[in-house]
Length: 123
Image (cartoon, rainbow, N blue to C red):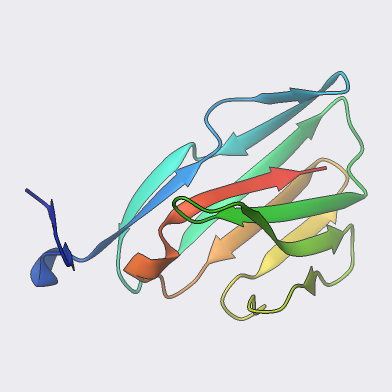
């Protein structure tokens, strides 16, 4: 099997990201997150996109949940401005764009197995 005690087989190191599955509904607005899941090789990048329908998202909040842990705020993005990152999260590793009221994206760069997590956007 790919997974065994002590981690992933050395030659098969991959990153597994669990993202919000399907659309989210809150306060009558629709938030679509894409992709709903991703598996990639170490060292590659993954882009997570959030689209907002019936909502003008001036602020977007990006969260991460490691296995068996609580959600942690990674960064807050205000439309047209640079994101504000929380401690332990660097812009170089997790660049965010928020160019308009209906879209924001988070990119995970130079991924490693320890980046395997659940990532979530909210507005």
